[in-house]
Image (tube, rainbow, N blue to C red; front, side):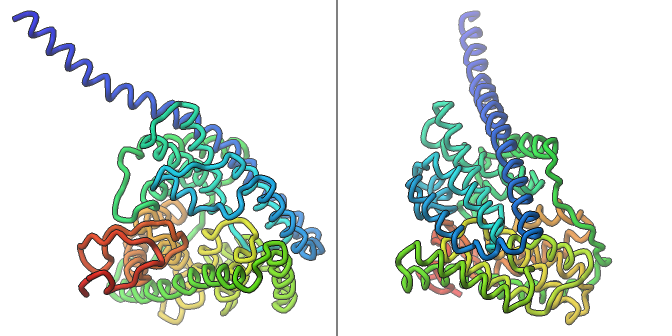
Length: 433
């Protein structure tokens, strides 16, 4: 009798120990990953910021963009990381695909070079690549198995995103839903959130200011909800154009100029020419000043979103490095700022809605986008942002920035389809309308 009691007690303790060991393992890995991503992320943010400031003080640096393109191509060839990008990070989670450690310095210095010389790109796409690489090799350091390595990769993605943008909750949700739309990797919640908070704290301590905007949301009303829904539909269309332009420019430039050296020079020359034709440097770099002006002052050029799409598509298609996330913010904010008043919405509030809704449609992550709205703008207009995200997500179809992303469930009905982004259209594979 007593022996049976002890056996049951030992079995219970062993069972509890499994949870305790798993929690300790992930907390330790998250702390290490968060520290690494926080430090590297802060240095990256400072590097991009200083590069942008230097370009603004010395406008002649724009003429060096073709040379910067040559340097980027050479760096990727030297590190044997040609062609690697965010899709490879997603594949590392999907299929356990390995990552080269040299991708970290390659994307770091290439993105800084792109911003220094006026290429149109963001930061957060590069953050996913660097963070995923750090998480992957931290997992190696801990001797994790194949399944846990995928969680470690997501942990790094979340931490680096949080360090750069100052949105730890959005970073956490984004990292664990962007891989397979329709499935949330709940086992990754604790490590991703812990790493995000650690990285966010370190980046703040190193002087990186979190991105926040002051926006006044209107009172909840039926008419305003309808207007926001219409704006969300417009954002879906803009997102489709944006994603199509980015992918289309990459395909066309590779087909017409197969040599990567010549392609980088041609793309750099095109950006220089376009900058002088437009008579402004608003579309070079990330464009955070333009985003801020749209969201907080309600000011944007009527075709700014189209010009940003053009500049970004050429920059990334030619082989320059950076990210697509901040350009999507720029496109959404400026489109919303222009379209909102036509619908009877304030330009500032519509710019905020546009920023979130275009991002949502471009990455196919409505929940992460809703959290983003709260962390950037507060929770005053939460229902409006949620509505705009829902409409833009559904109406944008199966398009997106990341072709390795998997959409598991139909956007039209509760049906499992398991298709890759940009490789499916409504009604295909017996998807009943």
